[in-house]
Amino acid sequence: MPQLLSRRGALAALLAIAASRAARAHGPQQVTIAKLLYVPAETTLHVGDTVTWVNNDPIAHTATAAKNAPGGPWEVMLPPGKSAAMQMTTAGTIDYYCRFHPNMKARIIVLAK
Amino acid sequence: MKVFSRASLLAGAFLLAGSVSAFAAGTPTDPQIAHIAYTAGVLDIKAAEQALAISKDEAVREFATSMATDHKAVNDQALALVAKLGVTPEDNDTSKGLAAQADAKSAELAKLTGADFDKAYVANEIAYHKAVNGALADLLIPSASNAELKALLETGLKLFQGHQMHAEHVAEGLK
Image (cartoon, rainbow over all chains, first blue to last red; front, top):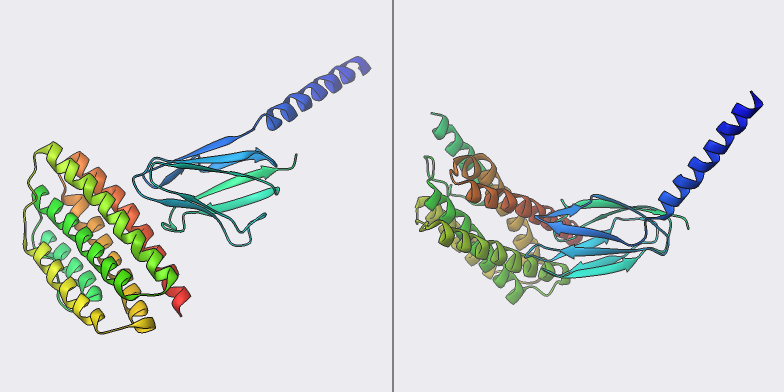
């Protein structure tokens, strides 16, 4: 019984390490824009990681942090066919939108280092 | 009867934008739909050019710039599509009605300056996009038979819904 427990404990420890490695493996992320959609609609990364937006639409967009977003306010201009990046410096859940087409919405989850 | 009631609905929507209904009764054909959508874009580009000539408000100018470039981009796509499909856009009563209404609005706006112009221009942009979006959703998209034309109109609808929201935000800032 104690052995089983310790095996379980070891397994739990291994799973915890694997989970933390997976969580830390986010690194830089890319969001693609096409037909007025941010893809993916939700991006997870760590403080210090960079998000790059690639605008494949023939029209200009922005990625604009919603009011009171952690680390905000910020805005990234995305001319047609161009990309731009920003490093995330504050942990938290950031909702953002396109100021030119406010029906375009997405989210970035910034985890602490 | 169904077609007639759709047309009535659109007439109602256009009453918001102006005093005359721009939409003719009946189901439009693809060449007519292409012409209507293209014309609606051209008219909004003209309105944007007028705003850029008159307005000094930064948010209004940015909105107008966005309208001019966005509608041009969509119209360029529409032209490329009709060329590919071998469709010749066909002028029709709805296109003519839209143009007449826009001319009347433009003459009205030309008499205004400063904050009066800004408010009237943005209010008209909200009403115009609302009316065009209603027409796209209720008549033009359901009537389009070519799948690529339908898809372009659907993207257009999403874009113009975004414009309407942008205009509403600008209007909030002008209060």
